[in-house]
Image (cartoon, rainbow, N blue to C red; front, side, top):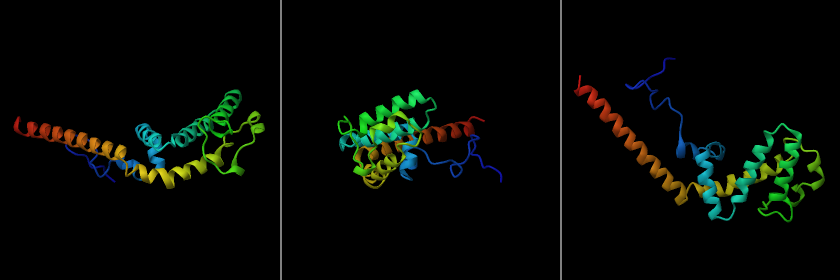
Length: 167
């Protein structure tokens, strides 16, 4: 199949993938893959007093990528003390029986927080995420993105017009 390019040599818009807010609306996963999306979602959750959910989810993602056992032990303890302990400063709301016993922190493994992370992900997905998509934070960002897009499209049209008339 041949790629279709516009006159600037870029793939036509039908070939481009969704970006920014358009991509965020397709799934929470896509939102969390975009640093700007995470920033806006955190801003929203902070206003809802539930920022700890996304912070926990991000900490677990970071933890899963760790290789060094000593670093894993330190990070596991940090995650436990910050989010899961009864004395945690940013305690997440997970089911009681799902809470980890502090004794397993000595033998960490990449998926030790997976069940809890999944609970928090589902809480965000079925609760906070839909409200975020209707929030002022999201809608303002979407409008700003659209204005930026319209501005760059106007510049592209002007460039094409100048090429036509200056040949």
